[in-house]
Image (cartoon, rainbow over all chains, first blue to last red; front, side, top):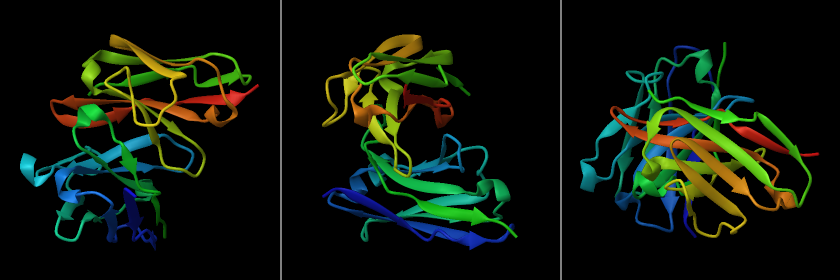
Length: 121
Length: 110
């Protein structure tokens, strides 16, 4: 079964850091772009960033709201992606979803179940 | 940055009725990069439509997408009980690379 499972969500204080993980199974993780999205309580979906597959350079892109604070990385040998979140703000409170796509034109076809990050003092 | 505006915000319909959801972009969007998702409470989004009109795997044919340029539509021909959910349109822009979502349309039982 093709699956993505996020972990690492927690309650953290403003200004602190947190790292989320996304563990893939059932497919060749390295063939896909991995992306992170988030959804604040009662709000819509927001794209956070993505990392291309090595075949497309393994480069990253970020939303303006997180650029310079968040870093996405991947370990294809382990089938795990990461979202390192630094200098967290209360407005980063959300459910964070990892996902994949082969070609962005084909849509984001597999999503994890999400992990909750709460930033509060 | 392209802004997607979805309307209506809420659609109140009965099972068996037809649902028409609109997604309007602030500037022209490549049809290759327009997708629709369904999200139910407490669940991850589910890909319905990509490339503006192609159904994703295992999506029933009562779901269809159409449109081009700045105006796109998701149609559910006959609502089933499991179709009551929130629907989002999403586009990918390459300069700079970014994905954006519309604010969503909630389809609720009338």
